[in-house]
Image (cartoon, rainbow, N blue to C red; front, top):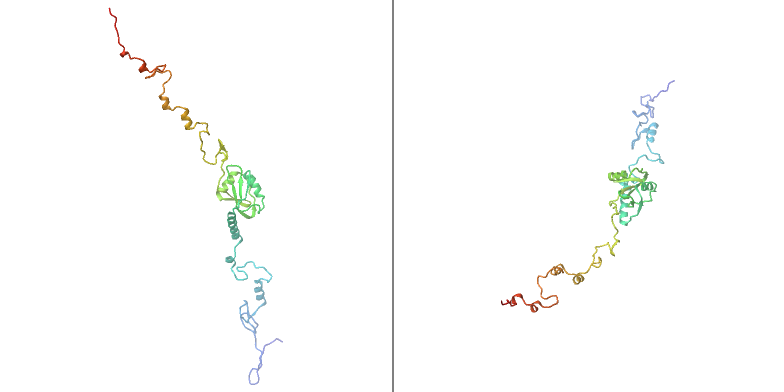
Length: 276
């Protein structure tokens, strides 16, 4: 016999309480004894199906799990506007280290015979061997010396080809990375000193560190006073008679006799004539 839902009433036709009613099955569209809902809702007294509960829980993070993404910290601070990234901190560190090096007056330096020797050494250096601001001097002429511009987190080995390639790269991008270090050209350039002499060199006992004043004695010359008492001037020589010349005027003869008082003029001599 099939099950039936019934409600009882008495002889006068009144329904008896409690009574059974034709209650439909619970669903999301009709209430029945309880009403179901597919999405959890705040302050709702409806019933969730087990499948709805599972779907909702599948999207929740387990209490021991790790979130794939987070936009805020535990205190509610927005991560992107509250915290600095490693890249940003690296830039700040580079700037700070540069400033500290300048403030400390630190200028460590190493030297290498050539770019190729420098590339080999720095490629193999640890990330703590050099500091920002350290100088790298290259002995060979015609190429700029270098300085440590930044220290990178990862090493990038530089493959040497030619000095010209390095100079071109430095001129184009400003830096090249050799191992852990980015290097840049120093502002000042080397000068070929082969044609120069040191300031300690001396000329006649006088150092070249300042202006040199030479005296007559320094070059073996006579002083003005000594020269005037030893040598005749050009004017004085012009007034002298060459020994083979004839004097235009003379006041004495070769024996020192005064000509005017010793000798008579021809005009003063009385002439005579013999009588026939």
